[in-house]
Length: 461
Image (cartoon, rainbow, N blue to C red; front, side, top):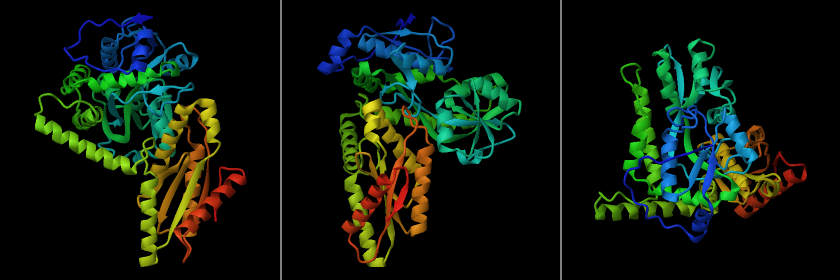
């Protein structure tokens, strides 16, 4: 194992106040073991025992502020890193997303930097507008990578070709054995330099890889400690790390699209990190107060109608939408339907895998539902593991087809930590002259019937 040694860090303020629980954890924790593989320029692990890269710079800041020593454990592949964590051989994974498949319980920090997944093609293809354009093509992805999980779950129509790493995927693309490769912007950009302008980034997917640090359940306090340290990092420090490792050679490769994506990505990174941190001291006091007030007002307005865990509408907003649909029905004889969903055996998920994994299941389920409902529908968390979908302008057949589509997508989805999960559906179409209470009662009875009949099915009542 290798101990990260801090040779240089810019001047910064360490005035972070830790809670008693956080301070107790810091007092009793001298070191944490971690592992990574080569993700140039994010991570250089093949020069063991030296470990460097963009991720290492963030770990140096964590070490400087917390006093914790990080011990580097060498791994052969990304799968090896995940296996080491599941066996308890390491305590921390420095860069992981919400969608990565980890067998053991893992606690995640807020994201500290983000990059989009991009689409690489040979130069005979100028531009790819959306991920859907890859349907029916052979597309390379790193096996077990976030890009692999994302495309497998969100775009099953794309034929995937798993590769050991990014370079192997780009070699297959160069030889014409695959039609495109999807990968992390920073890693792909660095790897393309080896291929002498034969390929280029033709577009980006809708997925953004949010780098978080994952720690074992025995180090729960590390999550809040690391979050506070990440929040204290100044924009200058973020820019220093970013500019140090993200380099583009314009003379050898045409990276015009890469620059556009990087600018957008850097904006997302800055916004997500600075949302709740101190405003730069160079900004005037009046502007600081104005910005803080605007941020607080926006946050309060959003929180008032948003479920904190899933990001979906909460019960308050759903009640408003239901009353609105009833008003439209009375005025315009408008027909609408409801779909009530309940996760099957969710208590067992919490009991067996822990509440953190249960929360991740609900978050992934929310994203999956959002991606598969109509733009005119209103989706929200009804309570606990129940979700409600309000569907305007539907008939009985289309309501049933929509619910069945959602049921099937959930059944086929690989959920982090638990993999397989099903949901029962109760659906009802509004009947003339009935009240909202009667409609909700019928929908609830339909859901109860689906549960009673064996779960993982749609009952329209």
